[in-house]
Length: 225
Image 1: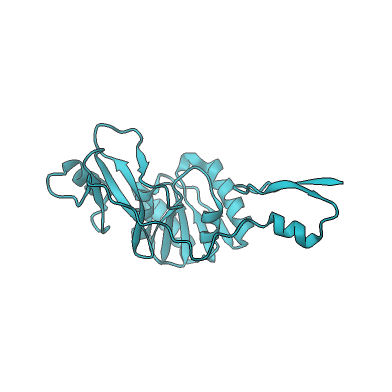
Image 2: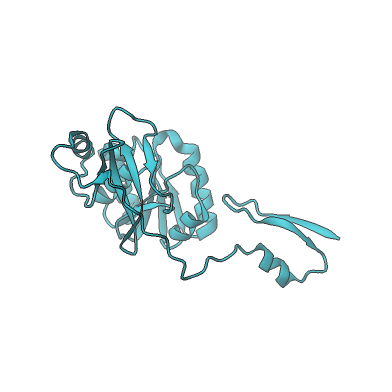
């Protein structure tokens, strides 16, 4: 007879049919996700001419950086065409993608991905991962909370690439914006199921980028335990 199988795990697209004369090994091989070739390299991003090193004339960029306290963060670019502060995403030292935040009068879309090649943006080298809503929150969290790596997932759902990266950390703290509590809880469940590691859902007082002392103190306490 013919049997159907489905994987209901978030972000898992494995499904199909098999005949009952297949061996268990055959079925497992079918259900395993296709492995990417180990030597497959992500292309280096071709930097368009309108992405430039910021200078004093780029007041909207300067105001944005000052507003969120990002002066310490290296390598920011400015998109003179779309008026965006641009955060490069590096892979093995090469720029593969970038995220642009609108700072001018044209605010839509607020965030813009330049190549889509990166699955996430991370900053820091700490032992605890903090999952946050956006790139600015990631930079602020990494600056204010000791010994963390902050990850912005660059989208609305957790993917296999996020889960594989987060599995490297013995502890993961989900610290999304306060109005995203249901998402925070579902992410916590999904990450915990996948990694088996300690995963904590934080209820924040405000978005991390607003630097609420209460939130920073709570995060520092949880990540250092």
